[in-house]
Length: 244
Ligand SMILES: [Mg+2]
Image 1: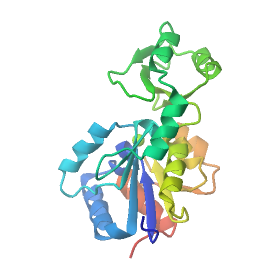
Image 2: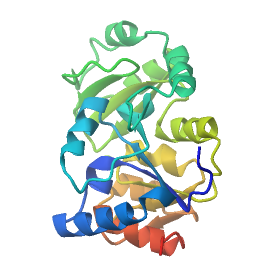
Image 3: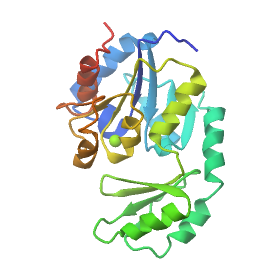
């Protein structure tokens, strides 16, 4: 693996790398493409692999080196789409095929609806903030799972200790790259674990207020006024990680 990267950008997609105006996105994508060989680009997203692949159809879209998908429960190479075995095995060991167990545990909990997806290493619900009970979270914790609420809408039941941030750290370790040049970026609470890594961070201008509340006191996180892709670019300048 090339260790001479000037920048390792680990970014969320929806609202972050895909956020902001089309003009700003295009300009940022072209900038990245121009310096592509000096950048290790990692997407860290709630999307599954299929929904990331759809983005490849747009010609200007920078293709990532690695895709951490499914809120941190899958890791694949951005070119071959092969799993990064070392990290994927860690995730599946932590999960132990718990999908049916989680669904049974939560079947009578109020304010929950299963999302129409079948991810392998997590269970995803929509939740209604008015009906949802904190006791549901206690139940999950007692059963040995982590839970991530985001955007006042999504509940992800996760393998204990697995989230975007921990999976990113495992991925960087597996790739044996220096982490000094790493910058993470995100916009919702499911990105909080990226900022909890202590790596340089960017919360983009459209970040949900609950995320901003949590990162406000973190000196390594820059809160941009600019939305989406232009917020990332602004944050890279702030952190001294521009490529020219
Ligand atoms: Mg997002």
